[in-house]
Amino acid sequence: MSNIVAIVGRPNVGKSTLFNRLLERREAIVDSTSGVTRDRHYGKSDWSGVDFTVIDTGGYEVNSEDVFQEEISKQVQLAIDEATSIIFMMNVEEGLTDTDYEIHEMLRRSNKPVYHVINKVDSSKEELAATEFYQLGIEKYYTLSSATGSGTGEILDAVINDF
Ligand code: GDP
Ligand code: MG
Image (cartoon, rainbow, N blue to C red; front, side, top):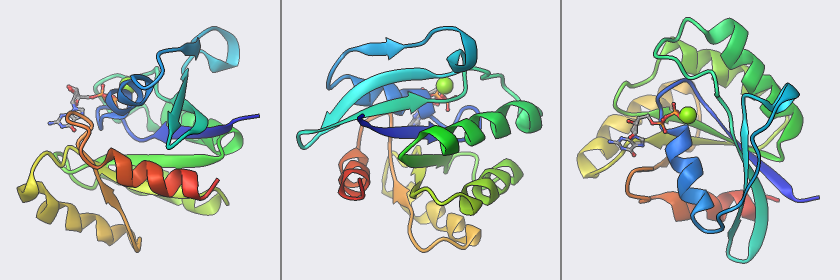
């Protein structure tokens, strides 16, 4: 059974962009089908010769955070139940939101390894803005540009190292 890495976060932070980037390494979508998994996409990836499955949560994507209680929390709980490791993605463009705090709290209560990733850090000027995420009380976060791929390697190194 391969390790499973789930990407969670509120709508529009860039989850699917990272998911698609990871799959470029090995283009095989395993399952995006019906039933309980209908809201998630699964794919195979590998890093440094280590294979893993990636889950893109959030098939509900609508341009609103009003869906939190019913959809986001459900997806986060499924990720907690199913994943080996969880990438919790936020983004510097919109900054730290109430929904981020709620997701953070759910993940904190799980015993899964969680990697806090601040996306849309496309250049050095956003690195400074990302420091606001320390308000979550976390010791470390990773900055990422899903769009360019910058930062992906450091995150994956950490994730596979903890398998
Ligand atoms: P999801 O709803 O979390 O799956 O987010 P998506 O992957 O669909 O991305 C939402 C929007 O953000 C899209 O318009 C992406 O092109 C954009 N986006 C994703 N990653 C980045 C990034 O690293 N930098 C910038 N500037 N835009 C990004
Ligand atoms: Mg998406």
